[in-house]
Amino acid sequence: MFLLVVPCFNEEGRWDVEYWRRMQAVDGVSWLIIDDGSTDATAAVAQGAGLSSRWRVSSLPSNVGKGEAIRAGLIDALNTADVEGVGFMDADGAFESDDVARLCHIAREGFAGEPPWDAVWSSRVMLSGRRIHRSPRRHYVGRIVATYLSVGSDPLPYDTQSGLKFFAPSETLLRCLERPFTTRWLFELEMLARWQAVEGASMRIWEEPLHSWSDVPGSKIRGAEMVRVARELAIIRGLLARPPGKSPRGDGE
Ligand SMILES: Nc1nc2c(ncn2[C@@H]2O[C@H](COP(=O)(O)OP(=O)(O)OP(=O)(O)O)[C@@H](O)[C@H]2O)c(=O)[nH]1
Ligand SMILES: [Mg+2]
Image (cartoon, rainbow, N blue to C red; front, side):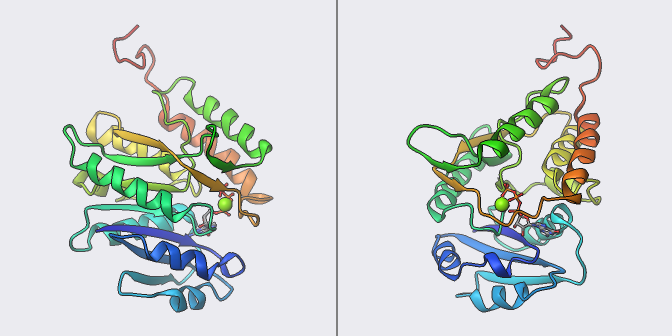
């Protein structure tokens, strides 16, 4: 069974009952909805949406931010019996159930492969024939940020900020989640830096292009949160910086 954490902050307005019905029909996936101190009726709509025992809602007393809500959810998921994989997915309806099922399948095989993958991350790549509806502005901002972070660090996945990711349960993953994240929005990158520190090697990530993704209106990253993201970018760049003299291949060139 895979356990996916869904961070929610004031998602009442974007909640789509039919969408969550489709998600709950995905085989082998259980859901842990984390209501992060919402001030609207998110908790109630999420509670009402559960169709089986594979759906759980947990409410945090106050808003701690996406990274911390996911950290709490992943720790909870890793302590749940019979999990073969954990992960998280945005609550805004951007991902389709077919992709969730497909990536779950890839993760299931990859986590058991030889050598095993540590994680499967979705990627919003506008390949021909896919339905990736992302505003050009957000796409180009994303590319600039990715380039900024990759200069001077080891290679990063193409799309580090896509909100659907799976991880194989492991002691290393638990250790990466032990301490609170410094960042709210770039915690996945903090996880990569922690992984490197714990394992002495990069997280082995299989990145899989999505078939569908849509930019759902009502983004929470606006105004002051934009300023916070800019600050977090500088923090992350420091965390990911390669020690001087070390090439991405580690041969000192
Ligand atoms: N736990 C928690 N989750 C949050 C918070 N703010 C936003 N989220 C969740 O984070 C996810 C992504 O938020 P969005 O507002 O869709 O972010 P976005 O700017 O549209 O990002 P993309 O969808 O990746 O383009 C959603 O599941 C939100 O509910 C928060 O303060 N706490
Ligand atoms: Mg969104």
